Image 1 (tube, rainbow, N blue to C red):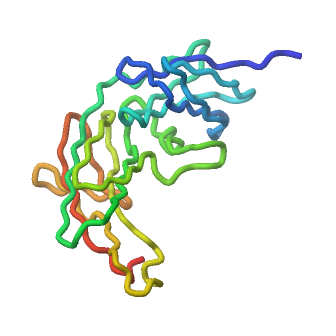
Image 2 (image 1 turned 120 degrees about the vertical axis):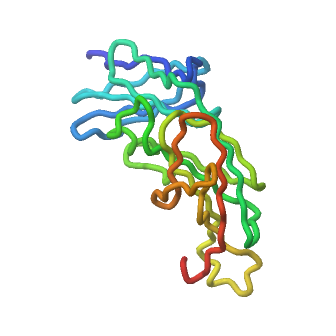
Length: 216
């Protein structure tokens, strides 16, 4: 019996091995997610090569910073998110109170060096299973810092408990980010968030509003 064809490579971010991150294996026409493997301590990885169709890889980093890298398959695959990551500082303001935990999310809209056709796979968990967000974190204060790959990212924030209308005298409110500002200018709306272009370090402000029960 012939041995399986393998894919070997290394995933790096800004030249450093991306340890414990994900590499997504895509193949076919149209492309489909076939598998997700994790990198080792130095960013190296190994995966079974799909038997048919073109094969593409998507490296996904979400630990020390948010980054993606893409490559076609050859004998040795170098997945490199080469650009330095930029720091995004987020300050949250609210005149309507503040939740115990605010869920802040980031999704890639355009990423330097990554084909647009691969970005929809960035939230893949396994074949047929995808997360709603690329990255989401619950924060308990009004300040957050995260490092992002150059490109355009969607940012948003919310605290929503859908059962609130059914509770008797709930002691909490629901919140959603209503505006995002950078350098005194409003960032454009994008889906349930706002588009921020990352070409250098940036500071933005998210403004919360109370989400009434009738909007749930």
